[in-house]
Length: 265
Image (cartoon, rainbow, N blue to C red; front, top):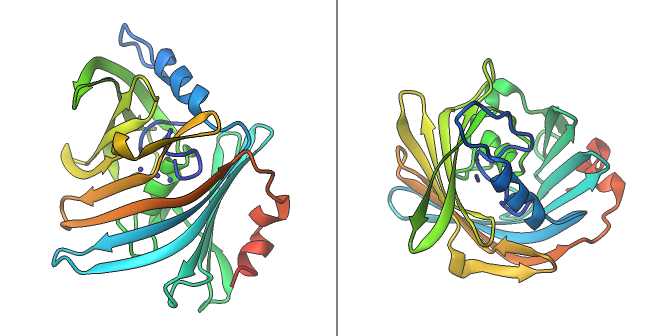
């Protein structure tokens, strides 16, 4: 998702299938080494990013949007916000994620509706603001989604880089578009450089790529500056480019409130 529009806020370190809290299964190998690696690369307090999203349809036509993404920890809880500034038909639209313990809630504001509404589990698999990220992808991208089963697969090499390989499956009873998510995590920089998202029937639906040549060092973290999501069924693609980023900046608590969400336009 693994790369939760995938970390945006957690800087893609928990992107699409790397859960905030993993439940190990008995595989003879544990995932602690990988989770510790990822955790060590996370910002401690916050992240603020301005991003450009470029979505290509199957004919190659592009739609470009601009947004700011905020993330901050509040004790053991986390909150994330994406707010669009362009194009005109998206300006003022916003999405807020709130994680308290094991519970994650999502709220959306659309200027034309002039009200805040909750994103339900029934609609979580739908496209988010016309991109190839679903609401579920964005939730996973922020590391807010819970996976019921996470296991470590044998290490591999991807483009000459040693990678950890982790397979995640949604918790039983969880609403999800995916049956299985496999992430390939660079062992040196602790970033999932490639993620495969399989829908039901073991059909590969989406591929998420974070090119290492677009990873930069910011404060104490390695940060992906480009994330590419390809929908293999719809034959579409969304590129997320991080234009500016600031870590460990104290953000106002009211920024992450439902009332502020409605006042963002």
